[in-house]
Image 1 (cartoon, rainbow, N blue to C red):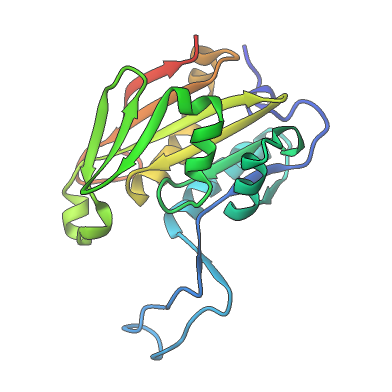
Image 2: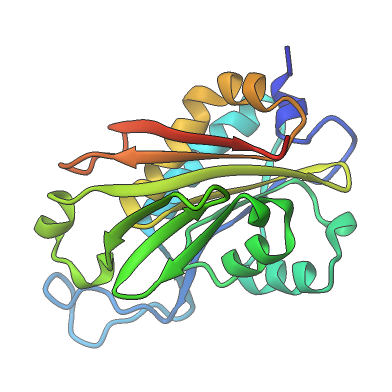
Length: 222
């Protein structure tokens, strides 16, 4: 049986598990609940990404590891430079909102199994040309989004002796739900994937709830 430390790529002495979340420059605070013009002086994180990261952090604690944080720009630079050997085991959260996601998929083995497409509909396309699509969530109201289906992925690649994960929903609740799925189901994922690169595609039926997930496709590199 694969141990949690092996699954997370934390067996050898290394920095803590690195988490990479979308961040937004000088994000405005909702003026309906705060004084007009009040903004954050630096960066804000997406709430659903943070919740997803909290689930992963619990796994790291269970494995006896700490977590650290890497910015999307920092991670993208290292990926573009193919500096995988200098990276600790990493978990990236978010799809279109994370500036490092497309570089991660383009340059890691996970990109051979799955891709994302963003147009009027947002789509996850798998190696066998299966597609999972939703209307652009950014154009839906909260009520419309809750009444729609959503999809997300949990993927892991082993590169240079480390494990590198992507947890990405087409919508934010799916990103949160994928983090929850990883926390609750890492043992079954490890058993199915062994040491191979894998992608699990999850469906979230309406009303969209992070805990209401269903595995619809599981792909490995072998």
